[in-house]
Length: 415
Image (cartoon, rainbow, N blue to C red; front, side, top):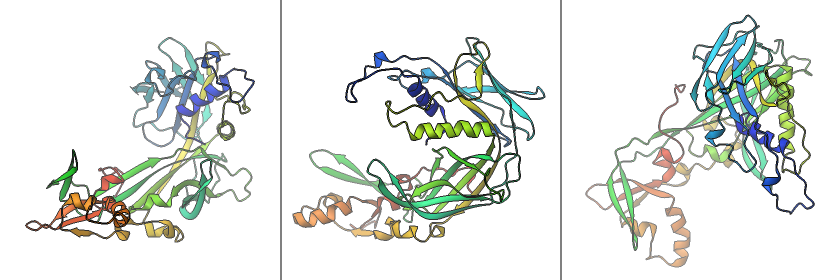
């Protein structure tokens, strides 16, 4: 299950619109035998949160084409949203195929909205009107130890599964979609004052020079890449519990100082829920072009000028609520800690007086000693020296330069 975006919709269109015959599963497929229909792909949603909302417009690409090619973007279109009272909000193209609302725009609960598109060629499209329903607040975000199986070999990956609970689900919808963003804060324990710059020739030599950058604190951000749905339609308690929203491998917390996750709950219509469920089912069974296809997934957008023209995608109208938590590694389920290797604790600082050339290539050691020592030393880098002496201080590379596991620059929302 992948993120709801243009790539998935394009992929779906390619699989659903391919027509071919074959007598053997090992016969090479001639892409020239595929029929291709250029269709509009719409990825759009609005909510009652005050922020820029985006509409992404692309065209499908041939099977042997590049779905990321910028030439597939639909530029120069006129895009706007109207409510059921006739109020209009225009979306402005920010980059190829990406149209954004004003930063002050927010949908209003109780109002219904429709998306309108007119391409540069004059083709007109419109979605159905969808009512915006206010979303209940997320009551809690918490974590548990979990083991996830991935890949064809079903590799077991220990990690952390985050869940949410919603105690009060008394709104007029019982269907939800979830998004999340998160960040790992990385603060390394050793201040890097010097660096060793290698020069490659007949052999590797190192030049030690002052290091003047601040690489002590970094952040590693990511966002949802799954289609996460939930419904309380069959829950007599009118609540939601233990909704899994994000799994993170334990290894991702190796140098994490603080972790934060924000979950957004979107109250969607029954029609939107049905559309996304069909996408889920399709993606669960589309391992190859030879799988049985679920058929064309119809959204809520159609052509005004050509009613028979297929349009891929969905215009989602949803109330949204968000909750953020901050977690220290030791706040994770205690079982997870058994699988987290903390390199800054496992690998002590080394003081070395000989040359760095010999540190990384200790020819004076036996082959057996080198086989044991060299792989460990390759994990180390210079971060300081004792000026006036030959002493050099080396630490595990994840513990002296935060850029190894993140990027410099604190997110705006981080306290």
